[in-house]
Amino acid sequence: MPQVKLKSEAELAIMRQSGKLLASVFDYLDSVVKAGMSTMAINDLVERYIIDELDARPASKGQYGYAYVLNSSLNHVVCHGVPSDTQILKSGDIVNLDITLEKGGYIADSSKMYLIGDVMPNARRLVDITYEAMWAGIKTVKPGATLGDVGYAIQTHAQKHGFSIVREYCGHGIGREMHEEPSVVHYGRRGQGLVLKEGMTFTIEPMVNQGKAKIKTKKDGWTVVTSDKKLSAQWEHTIAVTARGFEVLTLRNEESVP
Image 1: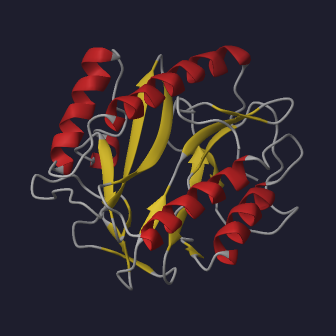
Image 2 (image 1 turned 180 degrees about the horizontal axis):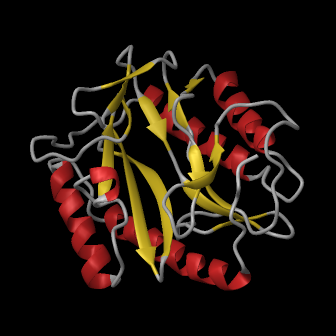
Image 3 (image 1 turned 45 degrees about the vertical axis):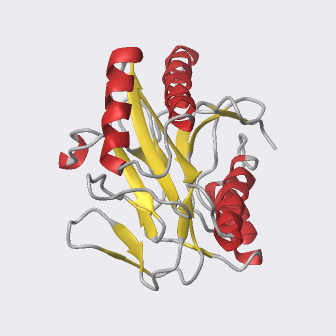
C-alpha cells in the first residue's frame, strides 16, 4: 500500500493559507482573462501576481523542468498545455488554467475552466458536467470511504451524460511535495482502493472528454490532446480529509459546496 503522509492540524493550517492564496489568483484572473489575450500573457500576469502581490512561489515553474507557472489547456487539449505568445484566446474557446502555489513550505493545486465569449451549448454542457463530476467525487470523501468510491462517483456522473473519463492522468497526494501518495484515479469501483483517513490531502481533478477517452501527447513532450480532436474539460481542487468528511482547501469566492 502507498505510504500516505497524514497532515497534522498545524500543517493543515498552513495548507489552508496556501489554498486561500491560490483561490485569490483565480479571483484575480476572473477580471483579466478575455478574448484577444495570449496564454503567455496570462502566464506572465499570474507569475507577477503570485510573487509580488501574494509573496508566494509559483510551484509549477521549474518542476520537472517545466518553464512556466501554469498550464493552459485549450479546447481539445486535455492537460499540460504550454502557454504561448501565439496562442490567442478567441470567442467560443474553452480553456483550463491549472496553477500551483507554495507558501510556508506547502503547496496548493487547482484549476478552473474559463469560457471565452460566445461558447457553444455543447461545450458549456461538457464544462458543467465535468464540474459536477468533480464535486460528485469530492462529496464522497470522508474517513472510511475509499478512493474507489471517489472514482466511481466521478466516472458514473460523466458517463451517464455521454462523456468519457481520461484514465492516464489522475489526482495526487500533495503537501510539501507537489506529487505525493496516493494516486487518485477518476474511475473505479465502490469499496475498492485505499481507505481514506483524517489528515490525508490530495487533489481531485477529472479530465472529461466530449468524445472518446483516447489521448496522445504532442511532440513538445507536454501537451496532451484528445485523439479525436473533440473537446476536453477539467476542474481541480485540493482536498483535506477531516474527521467529519472533507474540506476544500482551494475553494474560490464564487463557490459553495453543492
